[in-house]
Amino acid sequence: MTVIVEDLRILLQGNCGVEDAETLLAALLDDPSRMVTIQTGKLHTALWQVLMATRPRIEADTQDAFVSSYLLPLMLDADAGPGTLENPQQHTTRSGQ
Picture 1: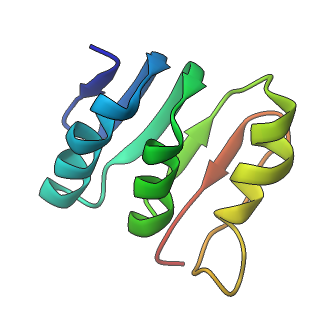
Picture 2: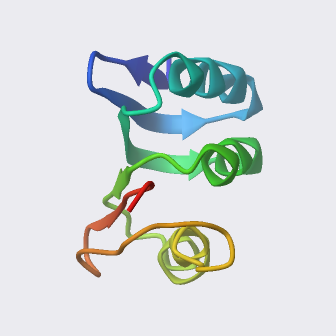
């Protein structure tokens, strides 16, 4: 399984496919305060859509230039909702601030 749900966080690990989007959404709806930690090789766009719709706190350690340059900053877009970026190497966004 590539979506691991723990008490205080959701770990996205390995290659996350479209089949993982429902698990991610259910875990975030169950407890919206959980932080999502992204440690993946590939993350299907369906999971990004869940993340953009639910706006959880995100911690991402990625070497993927596209994710770092385009997707994580979308989570910080003022028009899209709240969020902060704490470290350019290890991205963290927080909703509700």
